[in-house]
Length: 203
Image (cartoon, rainbow, N blue to C red):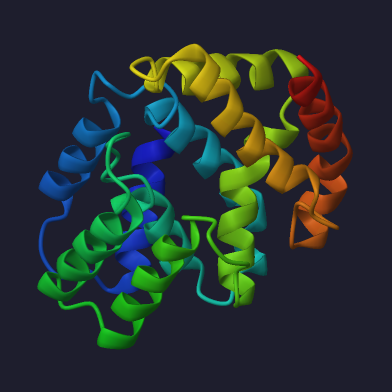
């Protein structure tokens, strides 16, 4: 399976010491939690498929790949520290496997970048964030499914409030000069993302 090969590649390239199988299964179990509708194994698999062709663009490919695995490891819709919790878990796991301190810190920083609260600062963070946001430039049917999945994850939020909050999020992306930070994803996703966002904001 592509997803298993991704995990093994990242571990091998990071010099992981010991068996990583248990941790991989723990992560996959998190992505299969019943309250998740978008932040699932589907999302993880889509991200891995997007990463593989651009791995040569990364300065630290294994760190980007490992950060991808951990970026939604903790996901609870009612809390606001999911990225911080995910990043901390990644750093602990890497240090427990005798991965170097610098690599562990960089993975922590990469996971934090997927909170989308600030523009990514490094080339690897830009690549990871673009992969995470590639769903905005998905074909219309997949984008519509994504929007339904996000709504389902926030099913406890009243419709009027969800629509207001969701439009604010989408408008924030639409108002950027460029949604994507790398040439690869600008060419692949920018135009369609703007079409998708325009449609979503007029509904």
